[in-house]
Length: 66
Image (tube, rainbow, N blue to C red; front, top):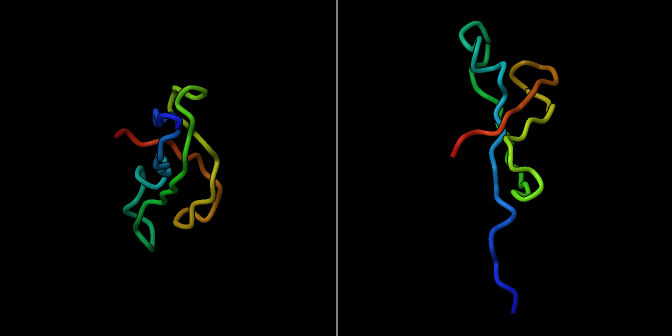
């Protein structure tokens, strides 16, 4: 039986442009995505370009601190 060392962890990605100018939006909110990453291959914070429904465009989503 193999031991689980939790190499893959679940992370949350948040839009970095929504939290800056949230007051002038019609639908206030922050776009968040949940995904998994391998900590051995990617020890740094993950940044992906994803679609934000509040900004209505593709923006950079950054990994949140735990």
